[in-house]
Image (cartoon, rainbow, N blue to C red; front, side, top):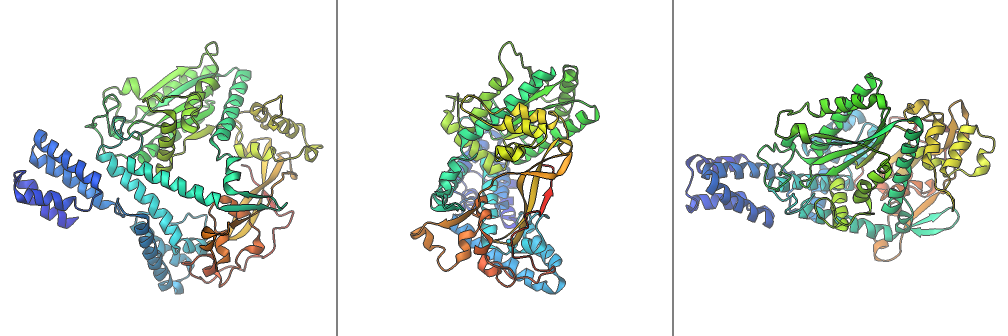
Length: 590
């Protein structure tokens, strides 16, 4: 980067004639390694700026863009093979660094190895992982490849936004390169699911693709559950005399790369990425909720994050409140939403909008259905608001959310959905002597031919839509579960049933099948020949249900769990090899 700046200085300061060899050479040199489309369009934009703003301004713009490209840790046009090679190098460097600090203990080894991650802009393993698990990850090629793929995608998209690719007149929501990369990833994952089998304890055999089709990975089923939940919220609100309001919150103009009406570049844009804009909205909502809490304002409902045409997120919220709190809600949200750049043109009219839900014109669930449909499966949508066919719009919006790590849907208040799903796994005889709240919740969760599941029944059974999670009448019971995975022994809390808050020792167990995972025989399966533990590596969460007897043991055998994982001295007694005892559960409020 420094070399480029020193070379560019004469061009920037002296303003070479566009046809002078030095200027042409500089332009070619600075864009030599860029993807073909980027280079072509950057040079065209440079020429356009040169004609309109002068050669010095054009050169400064190109130099700034070159700095952003150079800041990418991985070349934007690097192939997956290139990323794998970098991952191998980084895993080896991490292993060497960890070994140099072995005498200082695993905590120091983790700290020093984590610095290598930070150098690459990658967040080290979370604190929930012990030192050994963190070191195993940071010295693993596949861990690095996964992180580097994600980083490359986000860096590439940031430059694509700067180049003006992402807007309604060109690549809506997400750039062509990033969309194609996400589509390729989905095809790759689908192929893995098709070629991987799950075998239940009853001898049933399904591909993971079959199981995914009958799980919430299926957009139709996910949409159905979401609509059931929001209808439950609305029914409870109606019973309580609460009113519904639809709120839209957008980011300040400085976070939008393109203008909404025309798609042309926004002169106020400050380089904020979609992920940064989402973090801004999350922090904003945290402040709003804190104000509601301090003011004893009751709210519950659903939040939806959507992509603006240029990839900047905005939020839609369906909130239910007591009528007396309605003005407080509007004033509080407006005050916080306009805290940033309140005087910019259009801020007062467009930054935040409110629409009261009028039951005479239709229920809240029906009003929200189109927003859920256009972000999940396209139900009821032909074209989105930008005129994009539903099938293409959903694919691009889904890719956008995955690329930037944006959670599209989040419920506010009410019982956790995990409790709802766990109740549906409980057989009727199990709750024969259960308290009425549990019986009512179980009946509400059952779907029959002549009756839909009733989420409102669960909300009532736990005590209402705004009761704190740890004070809800029905709680999720979890058991500590230890399994050997790619990164050694991992402990997680698995749901095993439910219990009533007044009788925490009485657990009503749910039914869970135990599955083992295996690869199809053939070319795909041959990849794992000679490495039995590979068949149980965590391609998906389902792998964690594989039996322990088929997992690699700990202590000196980490290399069987991953080719690049190094063995570290243990600082605690060895883990037990048997399964958890029947009574070894923890009562954990969800």
